[in-house]
Length: 253
Image (cartoon, rainbow, N blue to C red):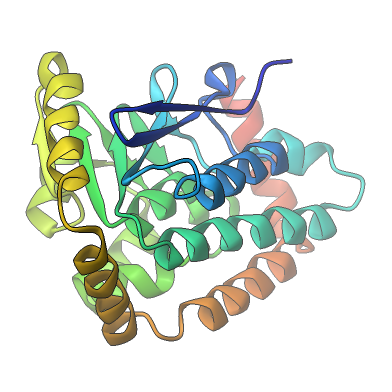
């Protein structure tokens, strides 16, 4: 089995590629641990900027629901996955390096949360975002219930959380959830241009700016994510979750 996260350094850019394309880069503990390790080691490897991307036709389909279904103790497994996810989100905000989400294809559930947590998000024109949690009787996690209200306010956040309708990348940009929207055929080149611009910024000024913005907008992020984790763990023990999960997996098959 190959690595769940591929790492490469190019021109001072650390690329972290989610590498479960056959599962649409769904998040299991190994993928999340690999992503955390990559984030923690990027600066020591000489990176000036980090880019998170997905291999294949999706950025990430969110948590691996098949593994949730197969787990002997689903609430305990959900708790474990959410714990590592929280560590990833916290590290994205904690690192002094700018972190950019490069979204091609679908960013669903925790994949959407991951993109929200990054400093900047670039998306291809055909990409789609969807929180999706309500479809399996879950509440959002990965910091989404703090990040979305900060970006959109209460009404829009409730709409995205409850109705789980697909959000095209163009609409996500209009709402302020995506910074840059690139045509599919230009995505690689224009994303690289953006990353090189970020690489060439003065690193200490970037670090102080990021810390100040975190202090202003997200001082309670880690405590809030712990409440999110308690929420999904509690819901994982409910019959509604099991029923909706079975229906979702049956419909997908």
